[in-house]
Image 1: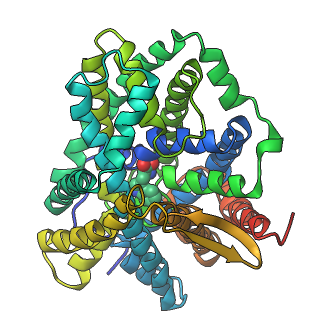
Image 2 (image 1 turned 30 degrees about the vertical axis):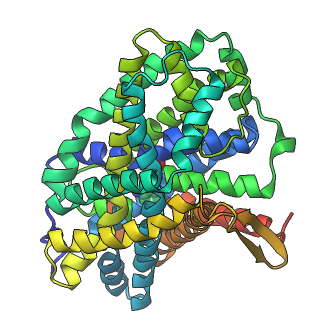
Length: 464
Ligand code: TRP
């Protein structure tokens, strides 16, 4: 097939804006609002945030451009895109494995992502019922504990969220994904700004800012640098083909560099604002910043309980959080569904049903991690260095995917786009200025791969 006539069988975004909204929808999700604050709290604040921001700029943005570029050039699911581009560039067909790594990572991430999205969904109803009105920090915390210690109700919420995800995926790119995000992303941002005003009124705003932005490098361990880098991949939806598959639906004329930049800025802004909302509430109520995955569920309801119109604002907030999670979850499974449609001749609907069932089943392990399986833990030791210790199924999946599989995927994407693809191919596809191209190619060839490898080697103790 000639390069010019290549289009995706799954359709195309109707405009550049549609792509930006969908990719922002994928990027902005639980990662920004749920995960970023809690890992920032666990890893000591400022220094961690700084490393995360550096990773976004030096690793995330260049790799995101590479991923979109590969996707648009290949116009298929990541597995087939990598196979086609490898053939085109005279490279081994085994590059398709990179697509497979992504399919597996997306599966595993979605399995626990859906469980947490289920928490958010249940909080819509809890908040709407007025349960939090005037509640104390202790009361809010025990409401959270009640939820996560009940596997049946976690299973119900997880199931509802998975069904909702697969419904959108089965309807396909244009009808499903595009429509859902157009209004929701801007609305979420408005709500976050309202909450930011609440946090400013707590009297602990500057303490929150100081925690997030004044770096104390003594708190930075090799492990927390790895978490910061892994999160840069996670939050931008990089390293597993989600952005690649979205790129494959991108019209030819769109500037990849500009679109990528806008997506990364929007994503980072949402995470930072979420942190600036959460930490003042943490300090105002004498809570623990390192409380773990329950952090936002134990802090925000306090704010809703005290605010005027807190029931309304809180309910809306959790509704929008669920939508943000929803627009992210569809991109986690899209590479697998697109592959089944392309290679197994399945309809989108049956591909969605099978993928959804498998992910749903895996998710049960994560929801049990907070109750029945709370004591079943794993450790990972590489070259005599403990990578993680006594982690539950949920923590293990999260650590394995976000901190290892995504950076490894990203590393190979950078190597392929930077070294193995002919510069004339990447130059033509990116279609940016001479200067912009030079900056990008250096970041993707040298800076990003070296940074990822240094962080890995640092963690396993090879370099200190
Ligand atoms: N970026 C999303 C978030 O921050 C999660 C997500 C969606 C994701 N697609 C992805 C993470 C692909 C890694 C890879 O919530």
